[in-house]
Length: 326
Image (cartoon, rainbow, N blue to C red):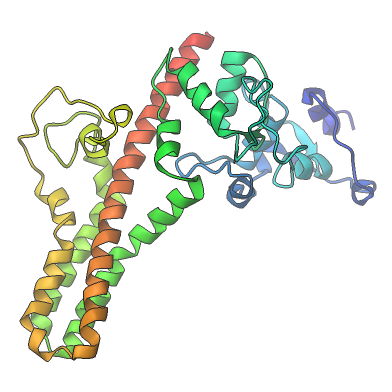
């Protein structure tokens, strides 16, 4: 029985149990805890599209045991639920960041895994994933870390209202190519030669495969290929804090990556061949579909670049944190 409750030795606080668990005698190995945590983290506004948090990692982080644990530990159903995907904040609007002090700002996001680790390493305090954090503390957090290493998480938050919106944009963007293919099929029904649509459909298919599987291998922080340079692609010339200068010229090109931005024009050209056959009541709808599919493909392309940029930045941060720790 001792082995079954050894996980309790890691706990920094004890949760109150509901009578529902009184007769529960089922135990789980931590490495067998594999429930999906996405919905739970979204509900706490702690979800990060580019960082998967396993159930076991979530549980361990909630008791401050991220760096020193054994996956052979056992956990009961009660602790699995109350420390895992059924965990709740003690104060819904309270900010738990060490820098909050006497500020009256209310929490509008949840602490992410990365930020929880950073707080532990830099401020020596354990703040569980999902705990509240206000905008002011997010900004102060980023400023403090910037003294030691590059951190772009809050730059992203400044540009995008919330993390769920980022995911929605990604999903919306990936619908652009299927929408373009539907437009090709619609053009055939109106009277376009199938030979023409077959060529464009193949072009769209190759572009889709490139965005799904290949593009991440093309992107880097610094590149003389304009479509490969994430620093150039993600810089906002209107915002000094969100722009970077490249120490090189962008005098090369990649025909495969350039093709991504040609999808809308390819399909539009098909409709130009049959514009006299398009019923007047459908023209406005078709023009809207063509425009939206182009925007969605462009959004997906931008998301792919941003993902690589953030993954690289995240690895740099964790590498620097590990060096500081040891």
